[in-house]
Image (tube, rainbow, N blue to C red; front, side, top):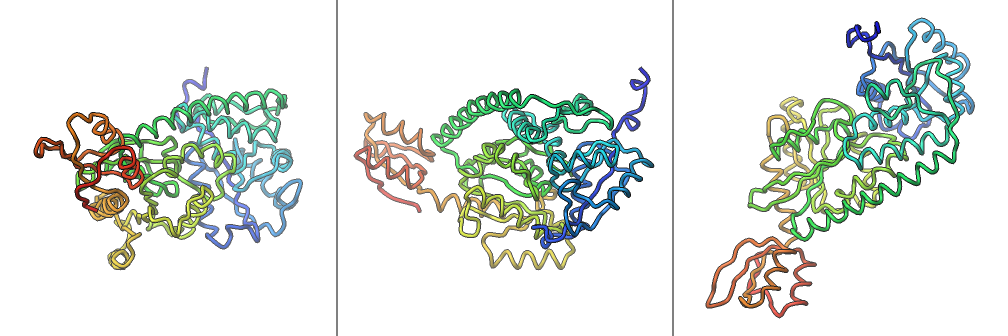
Length: 441
């Protein structure tokens, strides 16, 4: 009963954060130790944990059974005895054996980077598809560990449930029950995916081109989305503020309507469970007419974050360097000094793939929208047809598969101006006895 009377601050869980500086780690040459420590601390705060301490250890050789060396484990054990954190977070992927042995050494609950990210995803996913994806990724993660998830934080935040208190006994879950649950989730996800695919095909029939926002988490995608569409999607200076894809209609300067899609932010060393589980979420990106790669240009870790996103897009079979759909949107230029802003603008004049903007104050957005308009226009044909008034099928087909821009009577025939993709233009002329009377592209 006393817990009900405590203030919110007293009820917050505490965490001690460990960053292992592992030699020869694949990302070691990409980013600084300070940047990686700052990121894991931001992830920890994103799940509403109070950090009571941070320690960086140089790890020359990872110990197979305990990850850290004996001396390092003893240091952390003493810290845990003094500070009594609820959770010890290790900024690396631990094997089940390493996780259990570290818990024994520290006398506290331990979660690794994967578990922490899954916990955040579990707390933030709102749609049915998002929840299913998180549950599937979480079960695949738990399956190798064969432990029941700890639930006291899950009850508070709706997380994935890996972050139980110290001293809670790990109860083995029957592998068959997990497998059955995974099978059931996969079937439910397939149903949701089919619904999403039907929705995508319906949009193709409209058709409104799709413009997808991608980028490192906290790069400002949702703020840009809100500014462009005048929406109020949750946007905050917080890692993984957006998990579920959000779609809004946007009108370009030439009057062309497009669908703007905001997607989950990427992060370095994204758990493989999540890449697989969230592939459906990223389908809007795979099929988009334009891809806006939003980068936080003011972040000292900009280059590494940029390269991480490129790696993930490449893993999704997008040829980043040669894909003509991609525009790099250098966001947060308002956080740069005057000279750096000027240099970036000059660079953008010589590189059509770069747009410098501030989603907060709107600077550069007009140029960005003009570039998007140009890209979409270059991939679609604006043509006119003279149709017989009696041929309702042809007119209906154009409405279903193109964007009708105008129609008028011309000497007893119906002149229809329409925007079509090259594929749909070919399909129409193959199916109906009409040829374009003029072309604007």
